[in-house]
Length: 70
Image (tube, rainbow, N blue to C red):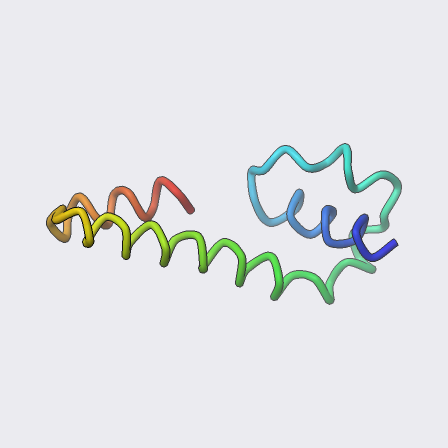
């Protein structure tokens, strides 16, 4: 049930194709997982920014890359 609610949060808050994993989870019961989904998306964006800047890309390209990942 926890995994289904986490998948429902990701399906609602992102464009990731995880709706099939959510099964019959009630989206209202998945509210507890919203901060986890946000933290995962934020961490992915932060990692993309660090990688882009580590590769020597400028701030505009780094920002584009970060937004694309998020």
